[in-house]
Image (cartoon, rainbow, N blue to C red; front, top):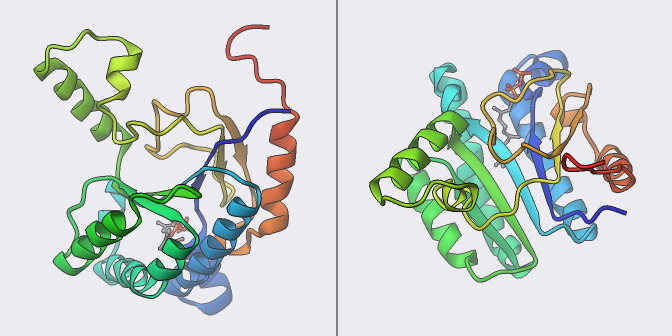
Length: 224
Ligand code: FPP
């Protein structure tokens, strides 16, 4: 059975779910956050050490301001209301992305990272204002400036995921089969699961089915 250390998720389909069920995209984001909480619990139950969630891409700034602001307010309230509980469960929160948000949210993100820094039960990587191509360009600039020998091991140290093992599993909900500029380097050998359900409809049972399937896959890493 394959060991499972790291699950990454593209939580797609909030907008469509919200329109269909509540005539509002933002209602879909709110429902999506509830699913995030369920999946965090299930990740701990499965003793998985890293969970990476794509919550806001560098491209998401193109959305209407009302939606962007709603997403930020959801995240702010989540941090204000839940960080203590996350901390108690020994969860470490790490932001992967470029912290260029409104001041209140930026500060909350920094404080939450600091508060949970030592925790070891589960590391949640929130990909926020994250874009893989920008990340790779920055890594190239870093390795070049420091005149480091260019090889995989050194290059990895300049990525935003420095010290984080590559995902074993990528899940994308929302019936769309693409990577959307997410972890392009890190997903090189991940097992990818595209799920038809929209993110707010995704549940623990769906998650556990994927985990079970993953554990029995023969992972060759290029060998036979
Ligand atoms: C993609 O669905 C989802 C997002 C851009 C935001 C994800 C945010 C959440 C799940 C809630 C906040 C999360 C945290 C961790 C606090 P979409 O809006 O692109 O859906 P669509 O394809 O149906 O339009």
